[in-house]
Every structure is written in structure tokens, then in C-alpha cells.
Image 1 (cartoon, rainbow, N blue to C red):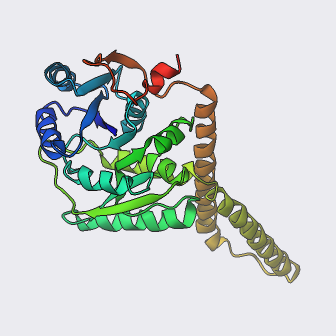
Image 2 (image 1 turned 180 degrees about the horizontal axis):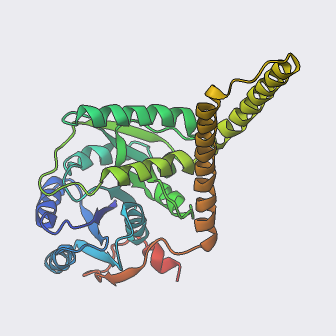
Length: 321
């Protein structure tokens, strides 16, 4: 078994040495042969410098540097395309995904699964964030056509069959949690206690998290468009009823009461704008998919210091040439 580990990095130069030491310690004596692919997602600090240094000092470490910051999803896709192993792990560079858990995950994977997903607890999170996250997953269970597990993130180990399945999906707007769920295959979940970040700050701001949430909710269904149809029909019925009442009062010599028209008008305008926003989200996605731009551009690739072991395969990027 040859294990590839994909690690997206954005401004993680201060922690790459710590990541290297943790991975070497966790895998020593347990995994015979492996590689670590550091994907520099357009960092503005010394991440690329550190990646070059680690690749020069340890032949098991390689790196790919993107031309700018494309986001975590494209960085993960890039790493998966460059992975050569029969088993591929995804983990973060900040050590919130404990490397020592990889040993257990690999044992479970070898028992017949194609995906083993680490599912974290929410210990140590703020109450507001926990409540919002749980609300999102309840909404996702109702809306999405694929199941999402609360606490199951990108920390996972995949078989080559699962990796190839994910790489075969061409969409531009990628929501990996949904994609990993969509491909199916036998999946196991391993719980682990939430780990605080060792250093630095999370790059996931509130707007970025909201955008990511919208990507998930709109990427695997068209259900948000359905309420617009039903709501439109209901409003037409209400308008017909209100118009009939006005005509009835006018026929009886009474005058309509306009005092309640302003809030009704504003409410209807708000509903129309919401409906247009949902429709615009889907149209924007269709436009982005039609352009067929690449998910990312590579600036520099750290050449492998040694030939790939027997039984591995060239990176998907090389196979496509």
C-alpha cells in the first residue's frame, strides 16, 4: 500500500515544519511508504519557501504551487490529481486533523471500505456557531439530494476507486462534502474530539462560510426553486381574493381601505427579490459551468525526489496530457 496525503495550504508557512514532524511521528512504523503533497494555494507568506525546503530535506514531501489563491476546493482537487497512491488521505495543515488518527482510518479502510471519514465533535466551539451549524445540517437534510453528516468534513481516507470517481466529476463549483457523498461506495465514520488550532487564525471568515454553505445547498438540488412556484400560486390566489373583495365593496358603494396596502406591497416585493436571487444563483452557476475555465492554474511543481514505487500511477494531471 502506498499512501498519498494531500494537504491544502494557505499562509501556513509557520506551521509546515510542525506538520512534517507530526506526520512522520504518527506514521513511523505503521505506514511503509507514503508521500505528502503540499498544495500552496497562492499564499502570501513563506509557505512556498517552507514547502521547497521540506521537499529538499525529505523525499517523501512534494509540493504544488498555484498561480494565485483559488480556494480550498480547487486546492484539494489539484492535490487529488497529483496523488499517486492506492490510498489517498485529505487533511488540513493546521493540525486540527490529528495525524495519529490516520492509522485507525487506514485499518478501517483496509477492512473493505472505500471511504473512511473522521467525524469531529463540537467541543470547544462557540454556542452561536454550533447552533448555526446544526441548523444548516438540518436544512441540508431537508433540501439536499445527498446525505451530509454533521461534523464530517474533509478529513478522510479514500481508496483509489473513490478518488478516480471524484476526479471524474467535472463541475466548476465544487462542494467536496456533497461530491464525496454523491459518489457513494461503502463509507465508515470515525469520531474524534475537536482539536484547537495550534497557531495562527482560521482562513474561514463568516462570509466565506456563508458562500460555502450556499454552494452546498444549491449544488445538489433544485428544491429552492420549487417554493417560488408554490408561493407564486398562493400569492396569485390571495390577490384574486383581495381583488374580488375590493370589487364587492365597490359594487356595494363602500370604499377600499388602502392602509394595509403598503406592507403587503413591500412584502410581495421582498418575496420577488428573494425568488430572483435564488434564480440568479442557479443562472450564475450555469454560466460558470458553460465557460469551462480550469479550476486552477499551477505556477510551480516540486519535482519528485525519487521514482514512484511499483504499483503507483502517474498523477492524473500527467495522464491527461
